[in-house]
Image (spheres, rainbow, N blue to C red):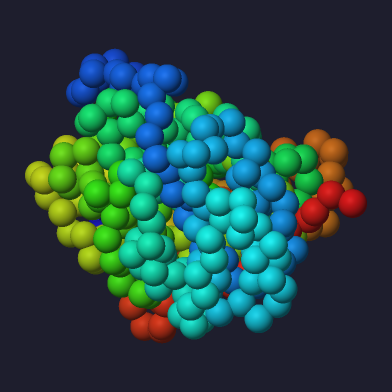
Length: 380
């Protein structure tokens, strides 16, 4: 009876995370805040913050992209913080020093430490955070800034879209990412998000301040500080960044780092679990559930094994084994083959939950061990 009870409890948790919450989110009709008063005529000073380590492959194209943004040039300056780069990054940035681009060199200490240096040097009323690899839509900054016409908005994030979404390991995450974009859109309309997308988000400079140098997810910690001061974090799908599909073997490491950062957020900002968080239900159901899900799955498997021998037990074990076999078979199934519609989601599901299990290591190993350069498939 104990095994059956644990099986029922674990199954209920898994079902709620995968089906129940998305359904309730879709049915939610009552906004808890007025619509954002976005005004595309609103303009203010902006400092673009770009922390980079050994980014010579992308930095020239990124600076060209930033300088081409359709936003008044006299209101924008670009601040590049080179995190101890040892390639040609610094020399390339120096070529742009007469074009509203500043370079700060700091010893290699990680992204968070580089951002702390940027906060001391930034002058814009709005800080626009982006990464070196992802190109931006020319109107991205204009759309982000337009949301700050609403004084209740403290941070704004845009949408990241994938180049060639039918190729590369990251393409297997497409279903998950489409759900994530949809959930963010719904939560933003309800009241507020609880994090942003690291390659495209903006923050009021008054809300920026030093973060621990081992921080893995500045795009959660910084916006949440504003959130707990009464500001909203909103999603604007018209502000767009693009990325390239990751090469095999890199997406898992990125997911581990992201989820380890979520553990950091939970431990360093316990307010997310209290009544101080007006979006607590959504945080528990959408964010914290990612960390909880693999443990609930393990509970389901362990309790299934512990059941008395029966046809029901064999049926459940066969189903659980089938999911794992589909995930393992994905590498062998050619693209375009009909079975790929099953193996690809299965692999993504297993990979994400394995990453969630591995992310618990943040409490046992230095955060610097989680940083690895993401390799991508660039167009030829």
